Length: 264
Length: 273
Ligand SMILES: Nc1ncnc2c1ncn2[C@@H]1O[C@H](COP(=O)(O)OP(=O)(O)O)[C@@H](O)[C@H]1O
Ligand SMILES: [Mg+2]
Image (cartoon, rainbow over all chains, first blue to last red; front, side, top):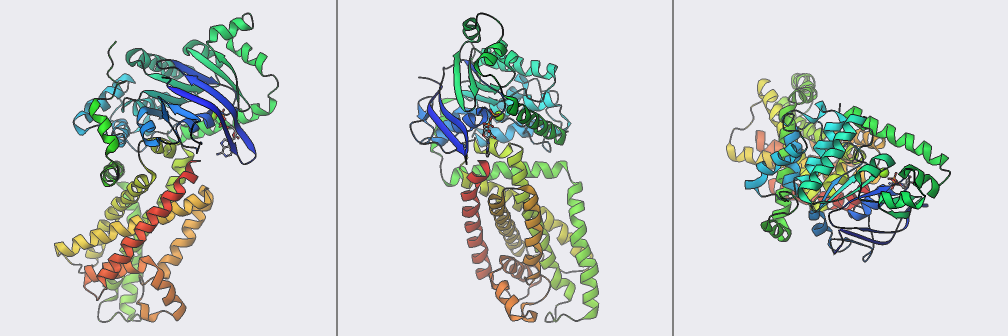
């Protein structure tokens, strides 16, 4: 059984075809990266898989459960970190994670242990009692990972986990993701537009452009296909000319910075 | 390979069947706990929020008590006004939740909450009672200010329980109303404007400041469909013992809250899209 199975997904916002016929399979236990420039449709795909967007039956399955029919059951299997830095700045680290333990019905007896364990995995034990608004961007991302992990999900979904972070914070986020996977064998589905990071950290990647998923495979295989280079080159070869997306990219980064600024 | 996180203990699957009231209750508790934690971190907010009701009571209340221009049937005007100001400040606190939910939408918080096994109605009910928690904190502050100014509120525990229920229901309803509006307008700026624009009419077209009998006919009509008036009537009856149609007031508040929760949950998906 696959972790995620997407068959011919379409999603439109008014006239904008955000996702235009995507087929996608994520295997259990792998780190799968959905790659593409801003506006490619990555977030929309993720939001469809988490049932935040209405999708017809028979299009998306998570561990064999149809997302359209078994929404609540699917959500019990998922830990989700959205693109924006979304931890609550007016709560402490522990409180942020405990909320999600409650929302996922982690039994009261195990709650404290689970919360501590999740915070520890993300290296936040020291900072756990401080308000999240005192955290750096990288710490907030790790706190959000802790929130997503506290329910022991089968599938961790991360939308642009390193966007807006400095290089050191990015490195530490990737390290933690790798550690979680190594320790738990959890499936990870993530999106990013940093090709280099994906090349290093993902088992398989899918290249997305203008709502379509063009290429799919291990970074190695894709690079071999164009006879050497980087994933960045693969992408360039696959999709040339994206001047208009450049501008969208700037807008997106600014929005994330604003979020980071608001949280302190 | 140790698997501490990947496999949820078998017992958890049971929670899947915990639908309906128990699930809603657990989400309400979760969101109220968060609200209490936030309050405990930022107590200064309670003080800043106390300024406005204090001004109403001190300036408006004491002046009009002396002037004796508003006939309140033997009750000092300040006593008459205090439950109205209490209701008003709870209203102001809860209207803020619509702005907050748009902010949460923009920040991705709402999406994250919605990707938990929490039905929309449970999420809205949780928010509504979280607003109730804040409303209660606010009510305690106003109660204290009024006592300081010499208003003799009831100390009967049964009546105070009634007051708590009325405050919770009122806050829950106005929170849902504002979330519903948020779901319709979808923008923070417009929501701020509309929040301001509805708060004042709700307040002035109610019995918070003056008895219904003083209102012109058209205002009395509005007053009849304004849940704030029922909230004030009940609070006044419970706190200072003026005549109140308590069963009717509770009935209206419970019904309004139920409709509010249904309306807000219906629009929540729109917010998340
Ligand atoms: N809520 C929305 N309303 C209207 N258009 C949207 C919305 N979300 C995304 N879009 C549009 O859909 C397209 C894909 O967006 P998105 O999935 O966010 O891309 P990515 O995550 O790859 O940057 C873009 O053109 C974007 O402008
Ligand atoms: Mg995106």
